[in-house]
Amino acid sequence: MPAFKFAVASALLLSVTFSGIAANIHPLANGELSPTTSAAVSSALQWLASNQSSTGSYGDYFDHWTAVAAHALWLNNSHSQKAALSYYWLAAQLNASTSWFWGQYGEADVPGAMLHSVAAGQNLDIINVTGVSSRLLELQEQNGGFRGYFDPTAGPYGQNVASAVDTALALWGLADAGTINATSRQAAIDYLISLQTSSGSFNLTKTTKSDPIYSHAPEPVSITALALLSLKAASYINDARVTKALDFLSATASKNFTDPNTTESHVYSASLTALALNALGRGGDASKPIAFILSHQNPDGGFRDSIRSSRASNALDTGWAAIALQLVQTKSLSPDPLVVAGLIASVAAPVGVLGVTAYYFRKRRKSLQ
Image (cartoon, rainbow, N blue to C red; front, side, top):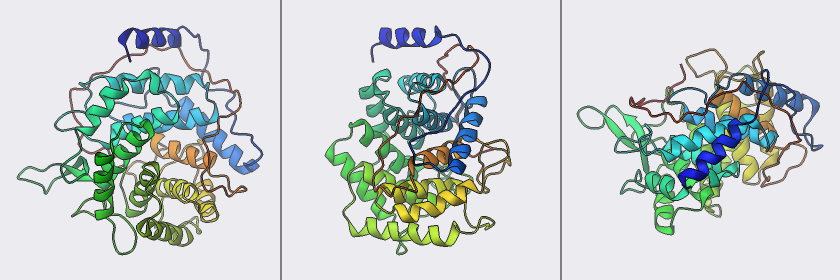
């Protein structure tokens, strides 16, 4: 996007005067959400709005938190000023070639998640789509995978390598933006499929099953769900391997998401599992993770996966939970739900200055502290 257009859009956004903190957020009222789910969505959105910074972000080096939070807020209200603030902040980071997630040591999962969110929120016009997509495609390796996961065992000092999560999120974002060519798309699909196990699940890399301190890939269930969501975005759905992965998630939903006190399941993976199952035609199975999510909401309205090191709610888990609760309509078993724009809701925020942040230090692993 031309620089003047971004400047004008930013100025228009900042010209709006806000007062107080988050108020009058209303969950989707389309006749599909139960009162319990509506209340949970409202509380989660209130948490996201209250914990957003004045710039629209949710913390340095946690751009992926901002991406999912913006999408959750936008789903509820496509005119949300809170969502707009986050989207303009995301655009500034994506458009800047010096942002920490680009370059030789880049991490494809973060800009991939950001691009997916911007596209899902119908905001591609505020980013330089060609430049962003080009930089993201530079992170694709010869094996078809996108790099970003820091493997301490690779090379003498460790290095960023291709992973299922980096590839899935990059593919998802590029497919949503319509900026990946057939060759790169197929190479990414082939790499993902190469990481599928005999159980139907997906490993993180060729040598690593999962990594509990990697926020996007703490266990195999969430990795598998992300892989399926990206394969669907890339129109790769009519394949026995996709069916096998869905069978794995269906079995997991029955095993891990029926007992609210189990220690073997997680809110983050439950949210992604619900979205993947619902998007690929298994809405009945998707209701089990939804019930589990509802039973794990924190008193403050936010969510926190039990695998995280911090016991506090965080924007990543809260955002994905809010998205799943809004999109997975358990009363209407639609196999491929459309993004539903919410009711007109007034979301207030303090006046802030939209800054373009340049990061000079890298965070190899995006763990939740």
